[in-house]
Length: 212
Image 1 (cartoon, one colour):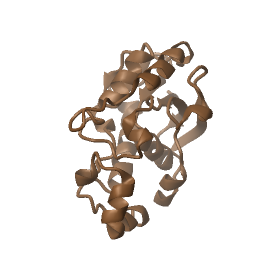
Image 2 (cartoon, one colour):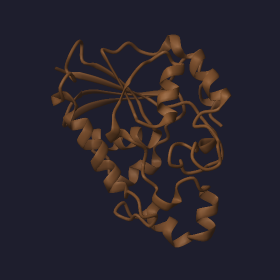
Image 3 (cartoon, one colour):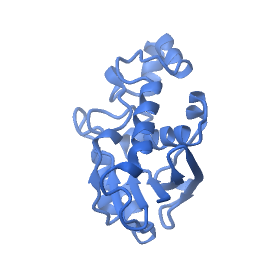
């Protein structure tokens, strides 16, 4: 069966607004900042009526994804393999801070897809993890039930990795993709043959003008 896998990125929160790497659980451990803020939750609730229909609902395991899904009126099954990019010891820190303190490490992270100067997951690791999940989706138990439509609330890095894998882009293309909060990215097809629909904002979510 042909699948339509629609990724929906979560509502914005402090980590996004502060250009900060997500913490152990989107900021809940450490500084007390929640994974999505009230403005982000309001945007998600306003867009709830526009969430596309699907026979199966999945979500990344983070509180940011799960709370966004609840605000949208979706009750997904958490998928552990779709966790956010593991930034190791950079988790919870601002990009500007890390760049100032570890410029060589940041340069390696941006320039070498096999590098993991933070001690977490390399870009190659992220692409392999997400790509392997995407390729196995049609063969997973229940994945092909109903009409083949799957809705996945997933972190932007996961969505970008899925796109890079699905359309066989070079790893460096990951850095040229931008996934806005509460936007849709759809992949239609099957393993090895996917068509891509990019970034349509949910009506009522605020669109590109409300991204910051």
